[in-house]
Image (cartoon, rainbow over all chains, first blue to last red):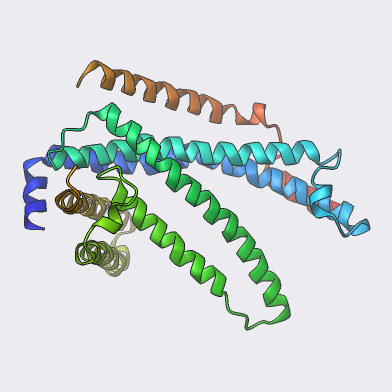
Length: 253
Length: 46
């Protein structure tokens, strides 16, 4: 960790730039996906409106009704919008997070060229994006199933939901560890002691923010927002630098 | 920074501009009532 702080001090401008790129990602993500999300909601509401009228008379064959003459254009547009949403997320994530991680590798004195790193980052995120899409589909299925189970048995437990959450967490951590080396299996080649230490540092930052911010918020809400943003993104990038250093030591590239 | 890195930056800028254009014209490409109007329709239908 001391070595990590020394690297950051030596490359402070690169570290600040990585933080700025991270913050810009969240702003850009909001701008680009908000409108698409609204459209998806509008189309879903329209489809549900029309379906409720049709299914009042014909209660079976939901999938068939989605492709009835009146609803088919809406269903196709909804499908297109969902694909566009995922594609936009993927493009923005690769551009901004790829750039941020490239700055992190520069801090760690790696010599990857920007366009090469971005290409490798885009390639590896095809795997994680596929995993994310599968997770979202399963999440919808399990949520609907749980909602139906609760109508029958109020005390039903959402075991499937908990297992899925754990799997999603593992997917996220595996993806995070893959970014310094651009190899999907980096987490499993890193010693457990190192991985756990990195997770502890990340969780510690998160808990610190959760404890500090409500206290600052009582004094000044705007200050809490600014301080929270600074601490959060500094913490994230500190963990990124440390992870890059730790994974480089154990998986010589 | 070499030439390929500069081309990468140019490509990224172009993609972001085209995506912004697409998002700003989403209403024309996928015309729908707004969410509020869609909910109003649902209430009227019931």
